[in-house]
Amino acid sequence: LGFQHALARDAVYQDLSEWRRQLLHRRSAKELAELMESENGLLAMVADHYAAAGDLIQGIEYYRRAATAAKSLYAHGEAISYLRKAIDLTSRVEVETAVLAQLYEELADTLAITGEFPVAEETYRVILAMTSESEALKSAELERKIGATLPPQQREDEAETLFRAALARLE
Image (cartoon, rainbow, N blue to C red; front, side, top):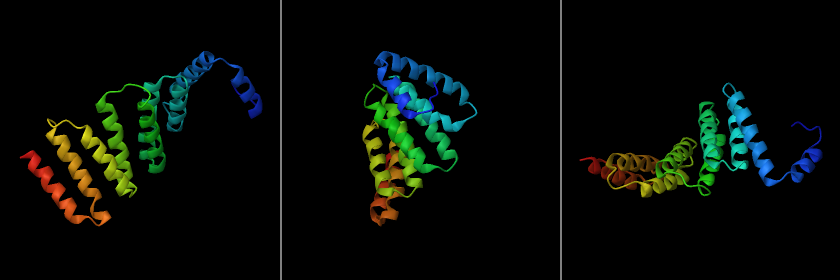
């Protein structure tokens, strides 16, 4: 529905039942998803509608896609925002640990690209804590990424220790 005035839109929206709102948001999300095949800018709108419709899994997926599209345009700030929205949605729905870890890793990688090294380090450490002891290669890769965030923070010795630990884990 298109409205010429925001107050009219808000009045109609408030009169809708929660169920009807969710239905309309779901329909909007599906229509936008079809349109967005060629329009990357609509991905976040699709995610917003899925989240408002209560379809949090689809909301997470479309925020992730929006982040990927934003990164391809070097819009790293937007990508960070979309990934944080996706991660926030995971607190309201059950998702596999691997999905959550992937979202956190995409966020940490993007934070590192933008020079937000302390936050990137903290985010990598969250993923490392989620990683099973049996996943030596993944743990070593995360330790390497954490180590790469340390020299810009004037913590070279700590970085070297982490790099050595990562190598030792692989032996």
